[in-house]
Amino acid sequence: MHLSDSVGDPALADPLPADPFPVLAQWLADARGGPYINPDAFCLSTIGPDGGPRSRIVLCRAMDVARGSLTFHTNRRSAKGHDIARMARASAVFYWDRAGRQAVVSGAIEITPEPISDAYWRTRPRLSQLTARASQQSEPIASRAALLEAIAAEAARFGGIDGSVAIPRPDHWGGYDLVADRVELWVGSTGRAHDRAQWRRGADGWTVERLQP
Ligand SMILES: Cc1cc2nc3c(=O)[nH]c(=O)nc-3n(C[C@H](O)[C@H](O)[C@H](O)COP(=O)(O)O)c2cc1C
Image (tube, rainbow, N blue to C red; front, side, top):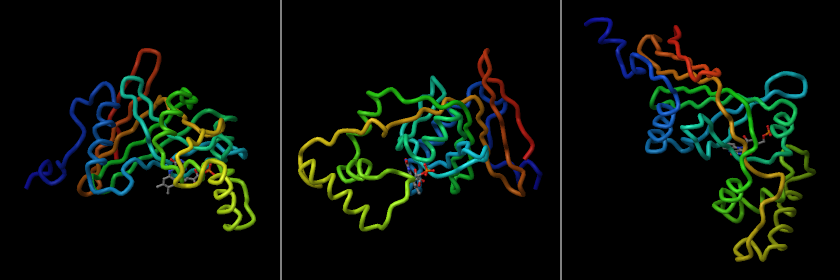
């Protein structure tokens, strides 16, 4: 057996594509069609008030290939929202284990246009809308019962959990766009001979280089 046979499992194209986003979009589409419970989940890291990183999982609700951005939705008064208000940069890590694929996307954060947040809000189940309204995300609460009471109070305002009264999106809940200036794609391979490439975006567009594993 040749080395190229044993470590030649699916890898990034050679030469590497000039723009990583079509590949990333394809990977996300593959994951959505694959065996994952949360194919859209990524670890989002922001910069906390002490200057250190803070990480949590959120869901990628849109990817704009032409712009090179991805969108997640959250409470803008949450810990991550405050982090972004102080320092509008973040890093996102996707990991699709069955495919042996990791993607790291870093860049600037922009507030998603309000009509897009409205449109996404309208797709959410009513109970999720009520909870988003009731939860002061990341703030302490006295008990779980108190949270459930707050959700019930919101439900009562809007005709119940199964009611038909439209539930408005709070001003502080909506999307953020992560506009990439760095993307790393990683494909796992036999014997740790992984394939990695890093794209960086400057004034003239993307430049790419392969990295050692
Ligand atoms: C699979 C999964 C998906 C999640 N998706 C979101 C999301 O899209 N938006 C969100 O605000 N929180 C989401 N969460 C909850 C966050 O991980 C986190 O607990 C919450 O946003 C508060 O984070 P913060 O206090 O760092 O701001 C998700 C958690 C998991 C495990």
